[in-house]
Image 1 (cartoon, rainbow, N blue to C red):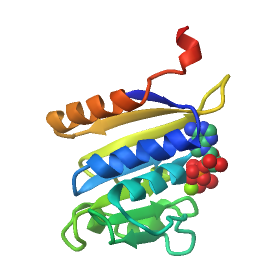
Image 2 (cartoon, protein in one colour):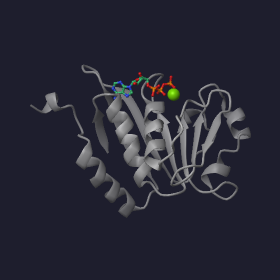
Image 3 (cartoon, protein in one colour):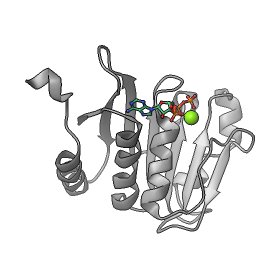
Length: 168
Ligand SMILES: Nc1ncnc2c1ncn2[C@@H]1O[C@H](COP(=O)(O)OP(=O)(O)OP(=O)(O)O)[C@@H](O)[C@H]1O
Ligand SMILES: [Mg+2]
């Protein structure tokens, strides 16, 4: 699924919809260069879950947990880490939902993961070439087809695949 997000508000709103709709034990891997909108998207997810705090990037803690919403949110930012350090964080404890209450696991810089969960949502943010805004590609990996179809309908109702100017 591909979407065009014309401004930061759209990135935030995209996150809100995910935070409202995704089921417990969902993992989101957010890829994109520095400044592509990963944290903006995560802040929207937190709002969609009903988490009142401001979500900053987990600079020193590496993983931030928020438990005040519909589901817990576990936010990782792996930018400064390498695969062996990440393995020591035991990210699977969060996405397996045994040790920690099942929630949404959001991971910035998943390129640093030494392994990935069996099922996840891949989100890749890239700058739009000729316009302001971002292109977002959402790929379900081993997700239930009904869940995917429902989410696609909801996203398509709110977000377009391409900038309006490219179609007219
Ligand atoms: N769709 C968009 N169009 C234009 N600007 C956007 C869009 N989405 C987010 N931004 C802006 O991009 C900037 C960087 O966003 P953000 O901090 O979320 O990126 P990031 O991917 O988390 O960066 P980093 O890798 O440095 O943590 C912010 O100023 C944000 O408002
Ligand atoms: Mg960030």
